[in-house]
Image 1 (cartoon, helix red, strand yellow):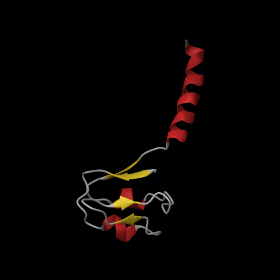
Image 2: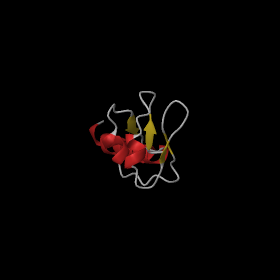
Image 3: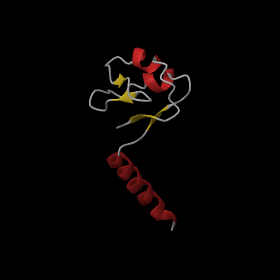
Image 4: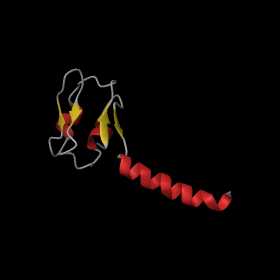
Length: 77
């Protein structure tokens, strides 16, 4: 789930209106982004007036970056 709505969400609806796929939906207490529908365009994050939407890398992507970073740092040990 790359884009996540934090508790700072004020449910203004801007992200819902700006989502080209309908992935951003009203939820209980805050908006929800459906990862199965999200195309990771970033409109929701850019349009949010309170910066309540953040990009979170998936575990697989994070593991690959950590491994690459570790490999690069092994030369300096």
